[in-house]
Length: 131
Image 1 (spheres, rainbow, N blue to C red):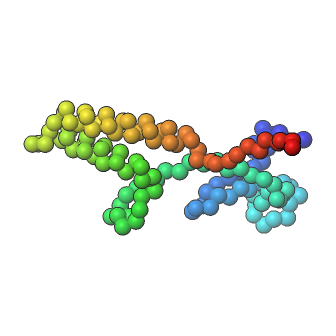
Image 2: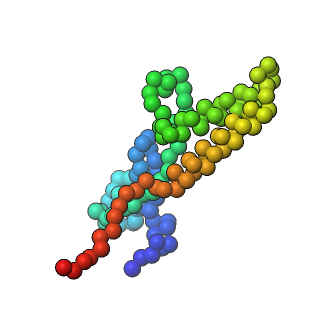
Image 3: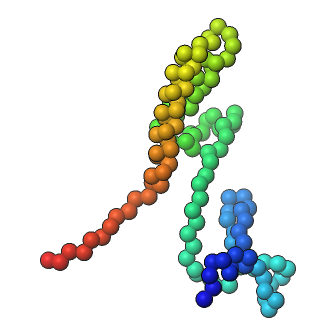
């Protein structure tokens, strides 16, 4: 039986556009036209992919679409912008207000980290009972 470590150099993955591809290193007996890689030979196997994604950057074109950031954290973005604006030189320069809004932003970031750790996977446990 093959272990995960023995298959380490046998299987590879890559991302092309928005698609994930998994390939197997071609062995000497294969008749595939690609010189190095082929589709994995045992098809129909289960595969679990865990990933994390980052929100896309804002641009002038994306101002008409909704954000990928959950709506409960939109206020955190505004607090960070306000904090940064109070640190700019000029007549609005006020380090006390910048510190206050920075602390509020930090609280929202802490809540966001708690939110991210929850994995947002719902499920249940079936407990057998005899009647």
